Image 1 (cartoon, rainbow, N blue to C red):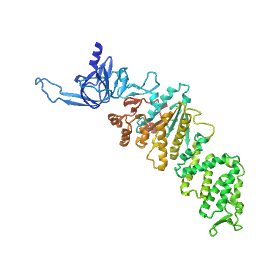
Image 2: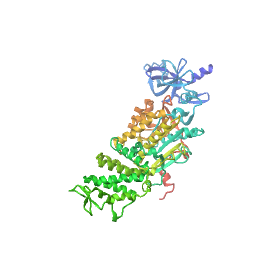
Image 3: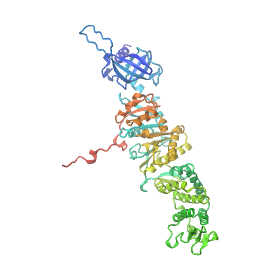
Image 4: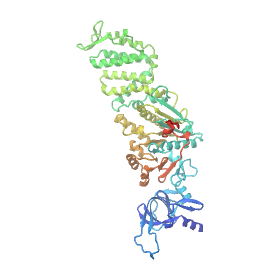
Length: 621
């Protein structure tokens, strides 16, 4: 009992003198203005801005955080004698209530009751500091330890359940330690869960790596599977994707940015025709008959402009399947169009097709269809190349029947033609191999991928794995991790149409809003939070906020992150490298943390280059 009184005497720093809403004013005893106190063989840091204190109200311990301090001067000063000096300055602390310690000796965030004027105030012992910074619900909870508190340097254990089964946002300027935080989190997670037999089957992780920072064998996990993608050449890896998933109207609309009302229905009609032909008993005959019908109708047309466009499409189809025709037998050198008669005719015999349509069968272009002599001419084409031919066929059908306007459809066909070879460089359309066959941790390295495909690949793959996971969901988890998230979650992109940008954002917004119930969780890291959709930022559950200087980024954090108090928000621009504010549902209050630096072999490749390392240590005069 005497020890308790002795301890209280040492730890007591003052008393409550004013209460204004959540703000408490504390008068500090004059003999407690030193920077440190010696207690039970330990050196305790004295109270300062950012530290925590305990207010004892009867048997209740109320925990507060020091937001500021000031000096107050006595208004009445009457020393007993002229030679007697009195210190008339008083140190006043401004404290906000953070929570309380309940009867089970657990810290609970929030306000249960307020202190009274005159209540005594104490410095927290190391035991109580550990208590209020303990994020684990139970002693047996799975956890990782990658950080310490910034002021007290107390190790922090993050709960795996409560952090990783939530949406996580990591923000910070370049060089602030953002990538180190992201890699530290998942390196520790994989190291802790890898000992469980069912980890590979029950938990899947997909990383989008825009700068090639996570592709080294020692980073994150040695068991990961890395796809080094490239649109510059055919030397890169290819992402395996099932044929039925790839040849889907949703996928095709994403790949080629089809508009909702005109281009997407056109792609859908083409897909139906494509599936009808390739699943028929005699693909070659079916395909030949389609081409012959189009040629007959084209050479019977009176509209010269449309007819010549159709002949261009037919010639492109035939050239793809039978190769370039020789100069002695050009596909169109035996026919011409007579403007007066408004019909095609055979040049040699001057036979007008509107008088004798049977002569169409004698034309070079009609007879060329029969040069597609084997099924190999068709099946040797890649899946996308075949679909492109059907786009031209479907467009021909629609133009012949006046069902479409060319200006509306040509943009999506041109996009298809310019992109499909690049898409084939990064995707392997298959019926066997699956994305997760080799590992449950997959990294898509997008460093050598062009700007257009950098937006398309993450959107397509996120939608693909999300849809598959919903179908196969059975107490399993899927985590999608997006580094440099502003590349694909930007709301201010000018490289795409408004319709497609809305579709891209709505896709990720759907995943982050609805995915939790299916065990799907998103982690985003970005140096430009203001450029990311407010919906996505506000739906995150836990935040790691490193140094941010831009005023718009700070405003976005203030508006979207309701967990952060004013004092914490004001400290963000001055955070040192590696230090961040952790806030969210996994913690009762915002905590300033220092994330431990990873070993050199496990660090992401994001360090700032040094000129001294580049030029070496030799010099000349």
